[in-house]
Image (cartoon, rainbow, N blue to C red; front, side):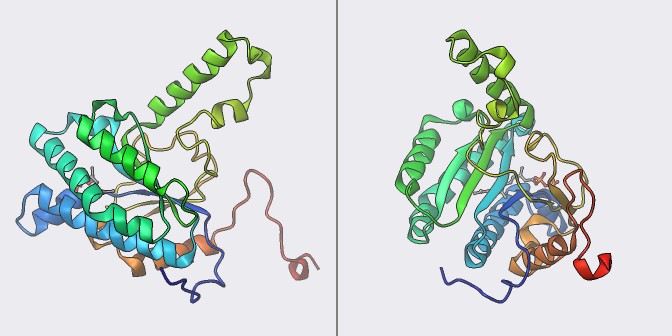
Length: 250
Ligand code: FPP
């Protein structure tokens, strides 16, 4: 993947998280079934992964299927699972060639054995890659993640490895599904809705949110670049005060 230098003067996020919304509406506008929208969504995933690689973004986390998405009609759930399996079979070799490290996060236990095995193989194949770290959230819910982390911490306490008085943010943080990633700097949600839908509840404490009306299948490299431009213009204070450039301070 060739490195693109055209945006290097921008302050880029280390970690981008994306809620890929709008596939169904995109398909409906074309008089097509929802699955057509999801399939087109995979093309947008490809474009965004490529662009993040070109820009040297370190982490990209995509919300592909939430813990609540299991309640969608069976036909849609089956279609999405088939799409994930197809995408694994078609895309992993190229991702590996491009030095992408893949990780699947979420409660994967409800997925088929075949899908779980494909995910584990893809993670193993790409584990030593040092380019873009691509996390795909499947069967993921932010509350599930926090409960899971609490259970892990409780196990450490029960085993006598941790004193309850020593439990701190780091104890929880490193027990979360994205424990080895920095918190997202930027969350992009496409499709016009302005909510986080049980995505990375803990990790979004100081994330910048950007809501786009573009439907996910239309979200391309140019749309990502525009989002990055907007991110670069934000002033992040992390609860502190804004530091003015020296000349403004006088
Ligand atoms: C939300 O749009 C989208 C999903 C629940 C599925 C997202 C999946 C993909 C983009 C494809 C596969 C991804 C990978 C990583 C291979 P929606 O169906 O809620 O759209 P709507 O709000 O317009 O109905």
